[in-house]
Length: 110
Image 1: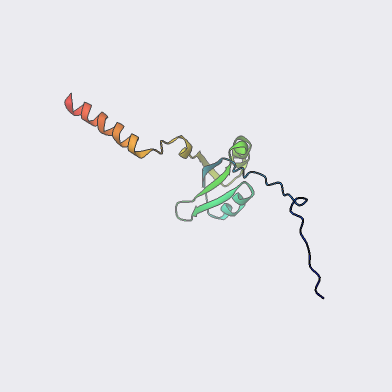
Image 2: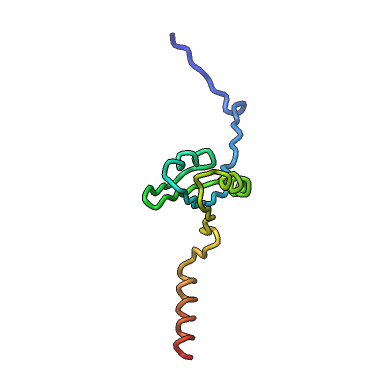
């Protein structure tokens, strides 16, 4: 009953794949009613749904954007679709703040 298992570390090398995170884009889907918002889970990850304002925030892969937009437009309950622009924003707030201050100062001097 005292069997021991010897592990040979040289023969059991594991190949570790790098973690590749796909680019995700938010899509705001405005609908006629709240009933259809459950169907949006087929297209991506539903992050938020507002019952009162009748919209849902859906995250999809960037490579599937065009195909998903065409499929969403075909749905009967969808009124409007907007693509989020979070990737285009400048996330370095100190530079953006300095730039805004310099623009305001130039306007005040005129």
